[in-house]
Length: 106
Image (cartoon, rainbow, N blue to C red; front, side, top):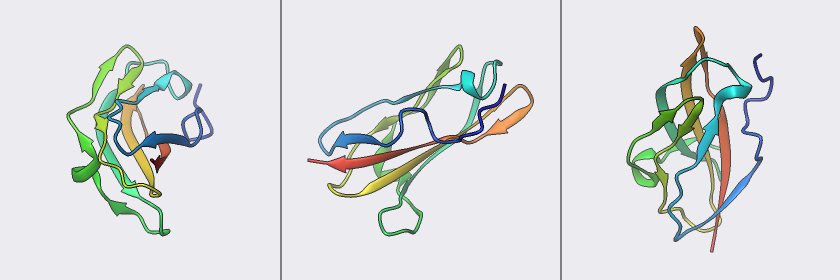
């Protein structure tokens, strides 16, 4: 079964600027096959453009356990900015790219 919506089910997430959080994505909604991560990108989308800020806000690497992808730590966010984190993975012969929206706050 493939999920129709690409946004993670949690909806818009909030994160404090001093927090370091390793978010997870359960890929079962997209495919029942174990995923292989092929890319993770973080964009600042506050002003409507997609500015790649991966080198600034992502630290570490991803890991996979069963159908759950653990993302690199998300950190060093700027108060009031909105970020879109896209996770590209393959599973069951398909390539998926779900995303999450994270709003930075004090």
